[in-house]
Image: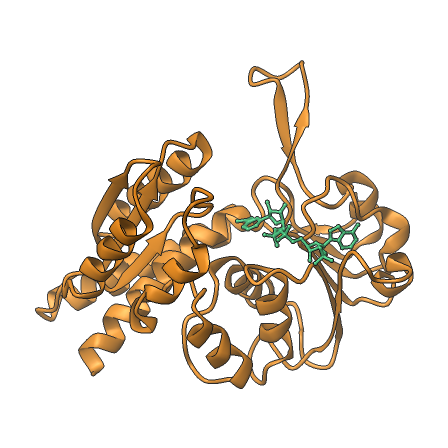
Amino acid sequence: MSAKLIDGKKIAAEVREEVRLGAAELVAKGHAAPGLGVILVGDNPASKAYVGSKTKACKEAGFHSVQIDLPGDVSEAGLLAEVQRLNNDPAIHGILVQLPLPAHISERRVIETISPDKDVDGLTTISAGRLASGIPGFVPCTPLGVQQLLIRSGIKTAGVHAVVVGRSNLVGKPMAQLLVNKGKGGDATVTVCHSRTADLGAVCRQADILVAAIGKAHAITADMIKPGATVIDVGINKLEDPSTPKGYRLTGDVEFDGAAAVAGAITPVPGGVGPMTIAMLLSNTLESAIRRVQG
Ligand code: NDP
């Protein structure tokens, strides 16, 4: 391996410590601690685990946190009422509804019910519009975390060609937007690829920064990477592996060993982008609490 490893665990720990200090400063000045409200619907084990780690992270950061567990057969109206309750709760600065939701509930309707002032997941149309317009607002945590990885690793974005593979509202599109917007961690020339892109390899090979957010194990191989490029692997895929206690292991969208021999810098999976997502959720919630204080 010749690429420099971008250590997401270490950078996420730095962000979380900064957030903890920021929250302590708010409280020392007599303001309320940042508050996060999380709603979990049903008993999907992965969702439960995500919510558990978010609640734990809140505690460690000195935040106030509220977790609302609803049964999988809760009505859409029942869920919307809980979101409204959190909207109206002055102790709550950020609201997160853990996705996916059961099929009988409209995710879009639920997301749009979250007050844009508390949309720390950055998923409402208003947040997306603010990001697209370059107006301060909340940005989805995973792409925001990728941008922080780049900034804090000293990787130049201005003037470089960044290729984002994936166009979801959660990752690909906001990622492209952050990279193209003016300012720190932005000012890149951005290309967005997806499943209909012709000759993905040829486009990826032009990238100085390549962000893979595809959801397919090892879709990006060494021959698709420009020598010296920065490769950010957002993907989390389960690969069967009977030799592990769980019977599977997590792997990214990038074929790591091959890519690391060509790239200049690369994120591992796990331990790259993943830890940044929760760190940025805390950071967005602190930001929301500070905005409230500043009116
Ligand atoms: P989606 O399934 O919503 O989007 C995947 C995107 O990849 C789509 O735009 C799709 O194109 C594109 N795509 C699929 N196959 C190909 C292909 N063969 N070539 C080029 N493009 C392709 O996934 P998400 O954006 O939500 O997530 C992406 C990955 O990131 C997943 O592995 C997910 O688990 C992971 N993730 C990780 C997080 C973290 O904290 N580290 C947080 C969120 C997600 P099209 O639009 O044409 O269908």
